[in-house]
Picture 1 (cartoon, rainbow, N blue to C red):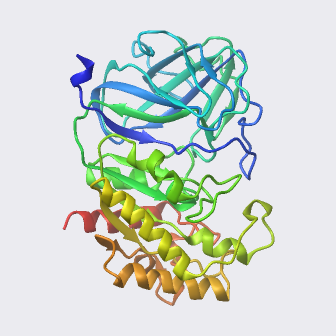
Picture 2: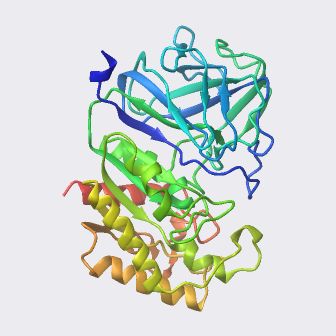
Picture 3: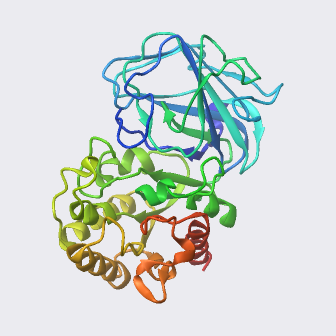
Length: 383
């Protein structure tokens, strides 16, 4: 019967290789004889649900001794009566090959868009360094032993703000109008209030009523791989967007780090940071457009947010960002353009973020800024 159910991806987190970067996490130490409990917010609802687990950067097989899913309670707690044991091809445990992934069998649980679910993994064998998503801006929990059936959160004695192994949650929505946002820390949600689900992807899902997939990675680059900030977006597009269920629209907000990393010597994780020209970035955008269109997606280009006064700003960055934004606006190569640069700019200095939308580093929006971004894109998509 399940073979005839149409699933839609309702939540995603793009996998990253284990690293410390600038976010303290458990990725390099991994897990052993522990349970890992993670909370995610869905952008679509349905009455059946399944999860995707990733071992994309694992160099050995990953054993998951068991997994469960439940409606979220307070903190690490879940709602009594909602716990569902997950299986994998009918088995309670699964071994995911190095560099591989797996999808669980679906379980019955009626969920609504905007509802949070909690996924618990029991990891009884040494995992080694863990494939993860560094910046969740949501608390995840760890506790000793098998805690798959726990409804209370008392047994989870450590917390982190990263996600591990969990890369997608899919629901039986049957709809095929998902919006995927491909980008860097601005898409990932840096500057939004942790634990409040105030990223622009969250605001967009609320504004449009459509499934929204967040394929952002903090620090990500369009043209180059990073040990801390993920594979270049032209490489990860297939895994993080095209291979997910129900996507019809791709929105690209990418290139700011390619331009800005070379302007600072303060952050070691920004290195190496080659100086790039507009023509190189335009070629990268064209490759994203070509690949997405080949899969039938409607492709929207977003101009870069103003970043004057930030550690990414400098004479060369100003020149290249203006050239790239002008190409996005005027070339006609994207199916549509959302001009975030203009809607987010300070009227008194268009190279800077509007003070009301500035998180404080002159680079990332705050909650209000992310709302404005979502409104601008929603208005475009409604035309």
